Length: 472
Ligand SMILES: [Zn+2]
Image 1 (cartoon, rainbow, N blue to C red):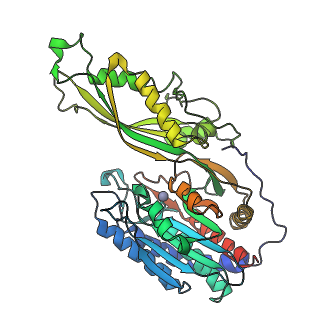
Image 2: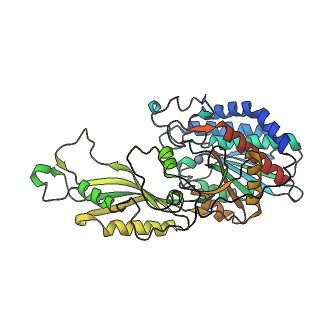
Image 3: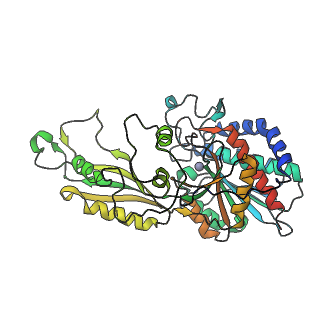
C-alpha cells in the first residue's frame, strides 16, 4: 500500500464504555463461538452445482440471529435478479432508523462460503467446526461467517451497555453470493437503496496484519479474468507423422504464456500499471513461511514484498483444459483452453487492463496461432478515501480494543462489489475491516479463525457503535 504504518492518535482518556463493553463481549464469547459454529455447520456454498437450499438455510439462520437482538425495525430475507431468468441468493436485510441526528451505520458480511475442496486435505471435516489451540477450524469459520457473528455480537454488547432506546441508525446486510461473484449485488443495492442508505459502511471481510495488530484495509487490487483458447490445427494428428513440422496448440500455448512474465517473474505486459508508494516492512522470510515456498524456490517480482502484493499487477494461469496425462496419446493437440486470472493495481481501470492483456496476447501469439477470448470478468480496484472522520473513529476503536495501533494496509485480493457500493452510495464512508489474520487460509483447506482476533474484532466494532451513538 502507499501508506507506511500510520500511527493512530492515541486518545489520552480511554473510551468510557471500553470497560463495560469488554466485560459484555468477554462474557458472551462462549455463546458467540457456539453460534458461529452452528453457522459453520451449514454448507452454504453459493457456487453453481451446490445445493442452493443450504444458502437459504444459512440466510435464515443469520436472519434469526439478527431478529433475536430485538432492536431492528424490520428484518427480511431479500433477493435481487441477476438477469431476466435468474434470481440471486438470499441476503439478510435489517434496518433501524436513526434518531436525533445520529448517523446510520451499515454492517456488511456474507453468509455464503467457498467450496470445501477435498475432505482429505482437511485435518478436521470442513463443515464440522473444531477448536484446536487458539483457532476455530471450518469452511466459513473466518470467511465470512465470523464477520456475521462479529456484527451480531458487537450489536448485542452495545445494546447491553446502552439499552434498547438508542439513537444510532443500524443496517445489517448479509449477502449470500459474495464467493460466487456477487452477481446480483449491483441490482440489490439499487433496488434497496433507501433501506441501505448509511453514513458509514463497515465491510467486515478482510484481514489483519497479525493476531496482535489490527488493520484497516485501504487499498484493494482489482481483477480481470477470462478464458483463452489457443488453436493451431483444424484437427488432431499423429505426432510422429507431423511433429517437427507443424506446431501443436500446447507448444503455442506454453510459448505464449511464457511471454507474460520476465525472467524474474515480474509481469511483462505493457499497459498494466503499478502504483508507487511505501509499504510496511515484510521480510522475505515471512513471505516464505506464510506462502509455503519450498526450499530453494525463489520469490518472484521486484521491489518491496508488499508493493508486489498490493500495488503491482499479477497474472496467474488458474486452469487448463488439455489432454490429461492418463489419456496422453502420441497426438498433436489442435487447441488448448486456459483460464487467465490477473490482479490489477489500485488506480487502473479494469477495462484498460483487459485491453492491455488482449493486445499483448495477440501481439505475441506464436506461429500465428488463433486466439479466442471469452467469459471476461472485470472487477475494479479500490482505494479508500482516508480523509473522512469515520476512519479516525474506527482506528481509535481498534487501538483501544487491541491495545496496539492499527496499520493501514492494502490487500492483494479483490472485493469487486466495493466499487458498486461507492457508485450507489458516493457519500458513505467505507471501512474495510475483518476477522482474518495471515494464518486464516480463507478459501483453502483448514480455513480457521483466531479466537483472540475474533474477540478483539467484536470489541472494536462494539466500541465503534458506542462512539457513533455519542456523535451528534
Ligand atoms: Zn469473504
